[in-house]
Image (cartoon, one colour):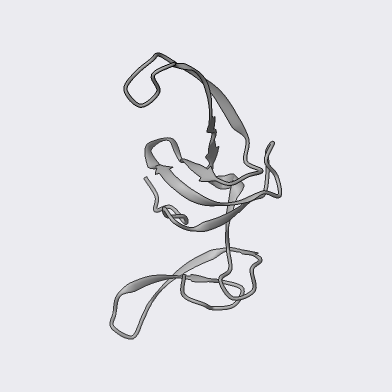
Length: 107
């Protein structure tokens, strides 16, 4: 399995699919399925039926964010605020870091 270009906590923009153009923060990465759950107001939500439990005593239908394939996400450049590709390089200490290809800023 190849290394992913996104991590939990990254700000991303959706570039394809139902939520195209929406921005949000990655809440969870599902590496085995190559998908991520993105938290944001314009992100597609799905209905999930739940039984009554301690957290939700009434049960019923709740709305949760749908997983989005990582190929449909681009990381937002911290300097310019625009979507960018991600590269990897060694910093001065010899540690691998991710950087934005547009500005060269370390993510």
